[in-house]
Length: 427
Ligand code: GDP
Ligand code: IMO
Ligand code: MG
Image (cartoon, rainbow, N blue to C red; front, top):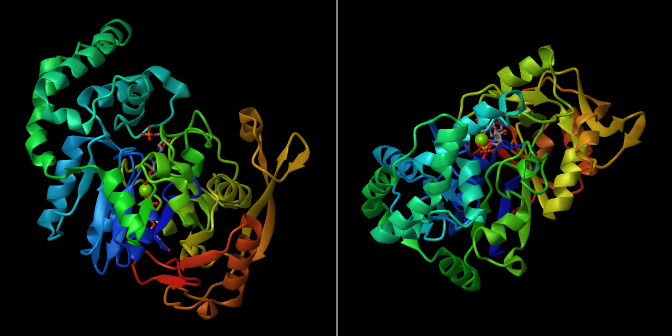
């Protein structure tokens, strides 16, 4: 089983970090293929808690090589501070590989992200403010700065000047901001170059060789399916492709080499930032999910919006990612509810709709159609096998599996590495 993708099936924060870490001990490479430090992946190992933003969660497994692929956007200051933070905690980070083709987030990208959001006012996306959108925009616009540019001072200056030419006009004339000095940006970037140089590699070559040699490669998605710039709730999305195809473009490993695609699926739904969310709760149940589930952003500290499980979204994730499995997380959070609503379809202008509406306005008007499943009160955090779960919890998982279109092969019953029920092996 050489290559598998692990990605978010909803709007992010499904527990990808935990799931990746769980597999990290048995895989050779863990690869981030898109996004940047907008991600916040929590990994709990024993009594230690790690919050990873840019680095792949595999960095916590000593035998695993972590890789930042070409599709990622890299803020060099964040990269170095995350590395030194882990080293201070005794984590060996020396194996990290970074693609020379990955694009750099510079201070002007972060500035533009923030001023654009402010300018949008009520129409803002609610971005993480980390410069993600402007950096991907520059990449597509062919005025981006790549990791490899750090090692050629004159090229770097030319590229930063070219990028700032237009942006400084926008900053000064539209946003009433001071122009940014290209030389200052270059000086800052060059300050990181020496420390980053040792990590830079032709990661596409390394990964293809690894797959050909039968090594196990795990692609770890950031964000989630509904935040995908093509398949998500556009424009309330991130600027990359967290969906399975992104693993190929963001790493240089072709689709014929991917064997398995695992969707991480929370037993309920959350979302951070703006945009439609049919099952969102504004009542005590929503507050309880937030409190019990600890639903506060790892990156921005914002309250996550909370709602019931949405099977329409899960089915959609199965479809656009070609999911082979689900990893259902946070089942333990639902303990204690007498009955648990599950959204099985939408009602849009009086009609029942089973699939995610293609039209954005329809999705904004979608009302959830609920079925009510009986809850359980038993503590499930110690469950090790499916049969250890109380009957109603088993029935809940089975119902979700039937509605979602792929087998639920693992179930999270707590944040820790060992708080997982493995139903089918992933490897
Ligand atoms: P990610 O962005 O997909 O990696 O997810 P986050 O780390 O942002 O959010 C998931 C949160 O849920 C983290 O605090 C995890 O430690 C926690 N978590 C993951 N799986 C489980 C689980 O099965 N049960 C509980 N109670 N918490 C979990
Ligand atoms: P992980 O990997 C949840 C959301 C932001 C905003 C939108 C665009 O931890 O699941 P961006 O800064 O990417 O331009 O913001 O995407 N967003 C996330 N929401 N989890 C994440 O990452 C997210 N990364 C971005 O809140 O709505
Ligand atoms: Mg997260």
